[in-house]
Image (cartoon, rainbow, N blue to C red; front, side, top):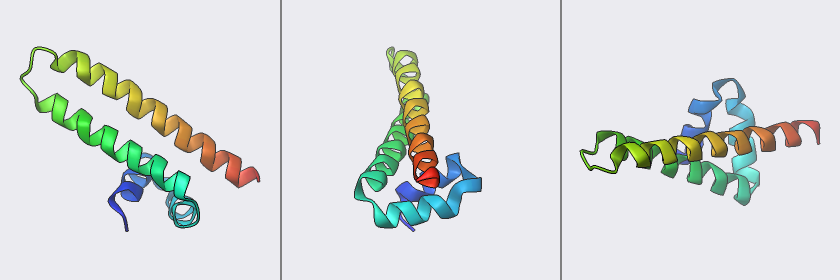
Length: 82
């Protein structure tokens, strides 16, 4: 399983099967999973950073992760109703 799909499933463990299936069928959904995984990885890096801008970057990436997760959930909901 692709690491990006695993990242999405970690956010929505009860929807793992739907995430796997949609990621297999839809490149744009898989890209959304990849964006989420990359944002999560960047957040972890900034959380470990001692940079003076670390706190600000953490806040930015937390918002990005939240927004990407919401977009992923909305896409799952849309497809479930589809």
